Every structure is written in C-alpha cells, then in structure tokens.
Image (cartoon, rainbow, N blue to C red; front, side, top):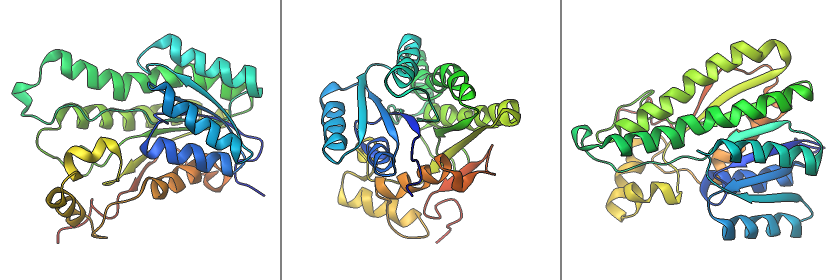
Length: 254
C-alpha cells in the first residue's frame, strides 16, 4: 500500500527543487496534489507529468504572500478532491547575500513575507480544512542556517526561517490534541535553483559540499523522502520537531 493513499496535499514552491521533487513523490505514493508556485508553465508541466503517470494534480499559480492565494489553494483542495490532509509550505527565497547594514527595509520585509508570513497565511486556512478531516500533517521548510549555524550575509533568510521553527512549535502545541501534527524540515545544502548563488561554480560547490559530514550536496529527491516521512503515518507520533536533513553540516567540524 502506498504511504499517502487517499490523501490530499498542498505543496507550495512546486515549480522546481524540493517542492517539485516532493510533488512527484507524493503523487507516486497515492496523494492527490495541489501544486503551487509563481510560474505557470513549469507547474502545468509538472501536473501533466503527474497525470501521465496515473496521478492527480491541479496546478495553481500565484504569490504565497497573498492571503487570497492561500485561501484559493485550500478551496481547490476541497472542491477538486474533497478535503485536505497534508500541507507542505515550502515556498521561500534566499534574498541578496549582503552585509546586514546594506539590507534595505524593503528587502528585509520581502524575505520575511515570503519565508515566514506566507507560512502563517497557509496555515491559517489549511488548519481548519485539515481539522474537518480529523487532523493531518502540516510541514514547513526551514533551514539549519540560523538554527545550528550562522552564515554571513544571510540575516533576513536566517531570521525568517528560524521563525518557522517557533511557528511549528506553537501550532504543534495548539492543535496536537485535535489530531494535527506540525513539523519543520531543515535541509542542508541541496542542488536546487535557489542554491545556485552558492554552488553554481565548481569552487563554490566544492566548498559547500565540504561543510557537510557526508562531503556532498543533497538531491531534491533525498529531501523529498524526509518530507514524505513527516506527511505519512510513519511519523504518527512526531510533532513540533525541527527535523535536520542536513548531511551532518550541523555537527561537522572537519
């Protein structure tokens, strides 16, 4: 039996990287998926690929910072597939890597809205829908940056992603008694388009890989498998966690 049979899931940031890999994995594991991102063309291609493999997907393009978009995703899950069981709020942005005194207020606000406020907006509408089904699994994409390691030039990114861990813990405590599990996944260096400013050159890739105990960078598919764990009943007693899937970057000193 597949891990997500008869489940309905929302996945944001699904046009590439971890979200894209997770959407395909969820569909293979039996979930009906609402895939969301800003870019329409790659979303449509993803939905078509899932359908060609016998899965079910609806693509909806929009901005996760928009409250009406957050509501629209939940409404689509309910109207098209009958409800909502899993939400993977994965959309995010790295922002410009620069000295903190050089970060403008508008740039800071944009990163916080994209990485943190969007997760709140998603949860605001996802939680009631999941509670109507007796509970579910709510998952956020955070990072080890600002949690186990500080990195120069990434203050807005670190602060916004660390805020997701606080949100995770608060929601886990608030809704655990109603059958809702809430967890955050903290990937290490992963070969995604967002990571290209750091790993886009041979020297950069070698440096980032060397930071990890495993001495390599993850594929999006590897991270997706840990998201599947949190989404499925395999993690039925797991809530409020900041799950490191970081190749040992948090412990490595070699």
